[in-house]
Length: 272
Image (tube, rainbow, N blue to C red; front, top):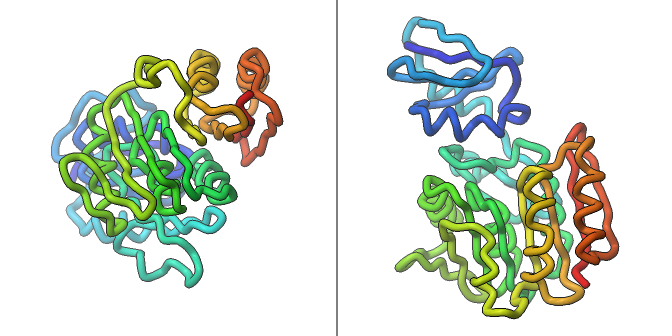
């Protein structure tokens, strides 16, 4: 059994998980301060890990033991096989690990889901930029939003996001997910101002991206949001906060606030 072993945990290495899945990993497991990725054959990987050949074992059972439900405000994020462990009164947000970023174990995902849950989502039109597993879009949909669109430039993420929608008991037909308030869609693409029909149409925008992308897209965020609408940004390292704050101030966002979790940060603001 071929195993690629990297220092770190599922949380600290979540940004690398999609690369491992895309390279052909058949499973991931956290053990003893290391992340273990199982493969059928050795493949090129530009990560700081080492290959080892170990005796065959039931790695799938061990891998699943390493995943636990994550509480994020009124949501509990859990893999489908742990749905029964979601506490009463919490909104289950079922996300199975796969080839898309966002299982809830990373601070960036957890912070964003919690921030979404603090809003009154009723009637909101929501845009999730860099949707990955669909976790933030699904949080908005399950929380009561009217219309939700999840965008990602990586085509691998779109089927995974729709699969996660179905895990949460949502009906998918012709690329449209039926939710209580309206519809949820996932599309391959980037935040293109041509999609906005020359007018802001969203009343909440969430994005889990690197700080440099937030800087680049700040103007598009402003153009996409109706005045007074909330913006939730994550994926930001603490030392990059000044860059993001400056970008939002440049685009006249107000009420800019920051929340830290270790080295990661969440930024919220209101559009002008």
